[in-house]
Amino acid sequence: MYYLTTHIRVVAALVVRETSTRFGSKPGGYIWAFLDPASHIAFLSLIFMAIAHTPALGTSFPLFFATGYVAYQFYQAMAGYLNSAVNGNRALLSYPNVAPIDTVLARYVLQLGTTAVVAFCVFTAIGLSLKTPLTIEWPYIIEAAFAASLLALGNALANNVLFPKYPLYEKFYEIITRPLFLVSGVFYLPDTLPHPAQEVILLNPLAHVVMLFRKGFYPEYRAVGYDAGYLYSVAFSLLFCGLFIFTSSRGVLRGR
Amino acid sequence: MIRLERATKFVRMKGISKPIINDVSFVIPRGRSVGLLGRNGAGKSTLLQIIAGTLELDKGRIVRQGKISWPLGFQGSFQGNLSGEQNVRFVARIYGVDTEELVAYVADFAELGAFYKAPVRTYSSGMRARLAFGVSMGVRFDYYLVDEITAVGDTNFKRKSQQVFKERLADSDVIMVSHSAATLRDYCESGIVLEDGKLTYYDNLEDAIAVHERNMTRQ
Image (cartoon, rainbow over all chains, first blue to last red; front, side):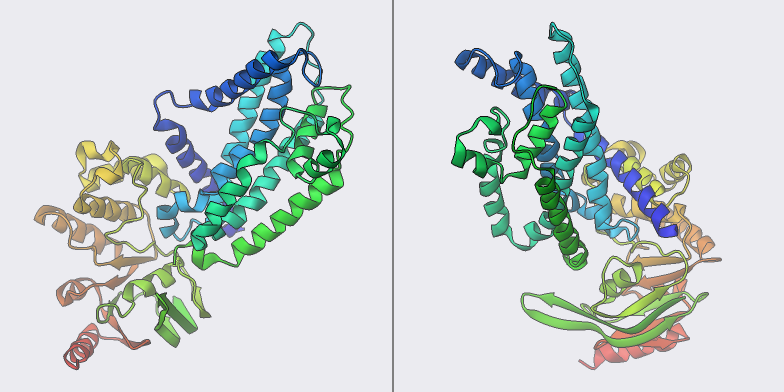
């Protein structure tokens, strides 16, 4: 019991600490957390509005790209932030109370909250600009956000150990994951792809996350090919491997 | 009480692996302040980190009873881009003590003035050490782990910190690493000599200092 309360206290203290360093140092602070995704969505919308007449779903380009981009961000922003959790708090690990896992959990909590608030603001703005009101199915949206964050967590637990241990792997990882955005079905629907391509894209668990997320905004969307079993098998296998690597490498994490 | 049971720790540096403590079973009793002696590179700081819990043993185990501080040293455990005050708040939160009280205590104790609200990376090493010392004196521990930090600041600050530290030692113990026999005599009653991976406890500090000095002339 004592250990649990210490962990909770430390995670809470780290959340406060991360908040002040993450947004406090840049001029404008929190604004950037919103401006960044908003500008991405606006760019994508502008480009595709010039190419096509209607989006693959519904009639609103901004809504179509926002559903894809925000779902993707629940993974991408989380993974990017968590990957440096231990390293970014290295100095604080000299307090015996602060366990390496606390730094990861604190960033997880903060990032999930941040993306959720950003998502809420983005969709409220888009909803107000539409002629017909949004029909929202919360369970799909929450489930998709949660699944995305679990994928990121498992991944990042492993990377926090592997990056400092194998710098070459870090470079490799960066190169491999760079085109992830393109193969996650953010600006197209995997369902509408021709046959061999569709199967390949659906190997990416993030494509399933995006499909699930879109189901929450488009009641008519059937998400053909969405496979919850596959998504969660990948997510929990990653989480298991990540936890295994993380807990068995305490020496590396403390920096010795 | 801090008890080591068949504890072994190697440090590895560029393929060379050297035992810091080798199959050591040992009890540091409660109620004695202990000076830790050993030659340069013997592993005194490493041993402090093991006692604190920031380093894992390779073999054996360590049992700790009581609240143990982090190792107080010059390098400091502060986040450079946060201000001194923010770092103090963090410590207060993780140890569950009153935040405002600790912030006020350290502000008064460490005498950092306007620097208290400036990022720690702008501090001189003396200022860091004063901050570190102030924070740790503001949190009550059963054991204070001190790594060569007591002699910081000007004469005035030294006198003040010695006074506060001695007050703490009325109901806490210290495990102290220092190369200065005079500092150890000031704070400690007993001594431990770390030599060739073995720990030897001497109830009387003077015996430990004598053995340590003999070790030093041997080579």
